[in-house]
Image (cartoon, rainbow, N blue to C red; front, side):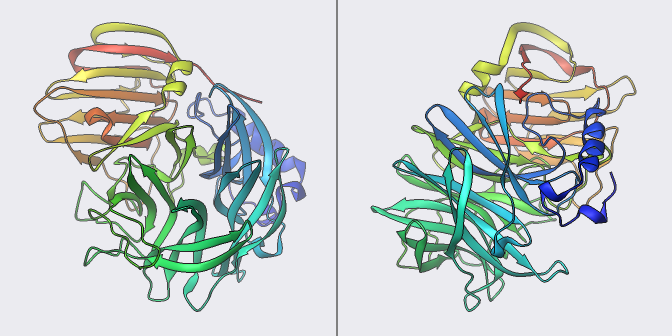
Length: 482
């Protein structure tokens, strides 16, 4: 679908129904790429997961949404809930950009549960009408009866400290005090993590901006979507960094914007030191992973990521939809290594018809789950009858994901095969793979290395391995969003 200038800056309920009808018919006509078990928008563009919360057995999931068009535009929030990751209720639009300080979009944010009250904290975006941001404001709203109401300013923009780029707030508890944290771009064009101490639900005072402690590291000029969580008495910090990439390193920082993490030795709001234990490094080695957000389910730390990336248009544009969310993953630390495992409740509910086969050939229609123990090297292709495919390869030293032979092209500056150095070489490792109509999520090195990518192979129908191998194969139930 081409851009429709008439609807570019209209709120969702101001757009003529005929455009929804056109978009929905295009979405329905997508017989190749529409996912079966990933959350995707009904039409238009989905990006960052927002407002994630688990409460009373229900997972609350909001996401940024541009209606109808598969392009970044007038950002709203859309909202779904589920208790089992199979059946979802789509509550429709949860945030419409109708407050004075979000005149150019409702940007990312989070939810927090204070006793019996749920608050939504997010960023209101202001521009000059020519695409240039003029200020970004942290807003707070009440969440009652599945509706976001009573919007007001929690932290105004401070032009003396920051450029207009200040966004994506989360609430963080430290030493019995509550803080709002969000990413900033300072006046010297460097990224940082702002801390504002909470005085009340909608009143905060500036405390500090944490910046890199390791010399000669900036981690980019803007730290988007920061997350800070205490895991096993360690502080796990990750964010989505603008301007932090390395074209000369095929293993690290190879997207236009990179999701990176480190472990913090301590969090000190009376200093400006991030206190990172090691320079921040890549979270996901695939093509399409950005803006993940964490939330707690009892004592489990979960996250969803945007299974998409900035600055890219996909072959699904012609069907008037763009991107999806990853499957939910549980996060842990093993030493300084981040472990990402498919969330057990998700896999227990969705995987079925499990069988074990010793083979080098697997039939597939749209989706499949694979799990195997790998010793040594291996490669496999997901392909169709035209010999269009994507390739996954384990060599002595590397893991490679190559989508250069797929049916549909993705044109951008960072469209190259993706590589990771193997963390496990001299012993067996667990590999787990989730395949959907146009996505692959590959967990390797006992869940220490992850590749998340879209792929566009029309009518793929088989997986071929270069050697016979013992495979645990499962079908995956389709989700139901009503």
